[in-house]
Image 1 (cartoon, one colour):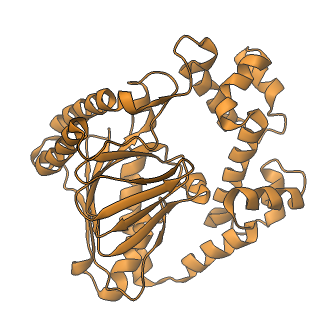
Image 2 (cartoon, one colour; image 1 turned 45 degrees about the vertical axis):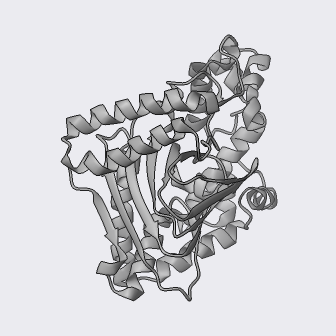
Length: 345
């Protein structure tokens, strides 16, 4: 199979390595670590035939990985991460509370959910899996974020052992063999995670059928900037009643809230994109369906924790840092980003 993508800070100039590492992970996380501690990190990523990625990552001392609403909006990544902790400690905080990941076990993170991970000398293996690849193997309405096995759980040990074995043998596999391994891994994960999944819907409820919800979400994406997009337009397009429509969007807080959130995400993407650098904030607000800049700014800050101007200034500061380091970082980040976006279910 193709050679894995590699990063090793020991092979780079000390001043460049951390910036390259941060830039490579910037699309996924906001990262914090002590600046007074020598930086050491390694990354190695294998592509299993486009079906999933397996990444081995290790960083020295304390690192905070934060999946913010801004990162969720701008990354365009809709995946699950399955972490297998090999050493040190890894703790996550999200809406449901705090969770410590046991050694030599696995924990699942949904990349559409805000969370903060605190790692300390924590080498780990991580599977990046397209959402649909796992969802279609589980009951309708399954929720996997936060699924985790206890330290002494033999099923957790089984899954962790499988992930470690994958890392040991992948380099010797052909592309076709890696695809077989990916399918086997997905089947194993689905079977082992089934008892851990939370069910928010019942299989016999046709209003929550995944196909219908997928059609509704796809319609929103296609017509996001249509000023007439709303409950009436969706009911007409999907040929469903308002009751059915509201059930479909119940977990998103309703149709209007979902549409507004997606429009804010699009606004964030435009604000940080060089292609839209000449557009004023007010122009982006109107283009994404907001009737006034004041309403847009208030909603934007509520969703992302910063004003539209602050979001743009932050991106401008990153771009202005320039130099060889940024170019190298963007090259590595682009390779990783391309691998992530090639994933398919």
